[in-house]
Image (tube, rainbow, N blue to C red; front, side):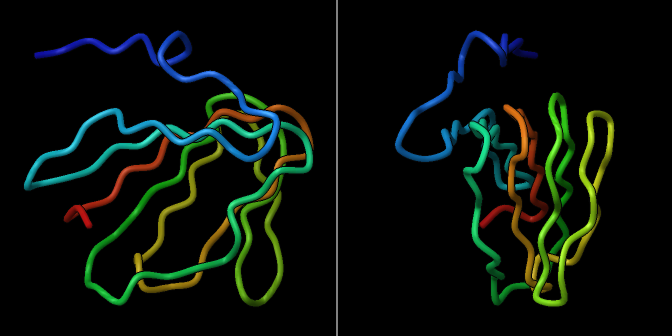
Length: 104
């Protein structure tokens, strides 16, 4: 087992969102992203099979898709196939945790 103090390991950046690889293995990938208000991860997709979750640990914003947006608040979890276009926009400072299985 390993413990990561996520809020201490990944801070915020002024120029763009702040990514941090929390864990990578042949079975899954876990990443942390921190966003300042107005920052976003543009809508994108991956041409592989698998699933992802985006968990809002702190803050408020929107999950993005090619069809629009869904409100994203602390405690919300988005579950999707990884090939489905997805993204995120922050309205307030946001911390999110992304899991991808299998990893890319």
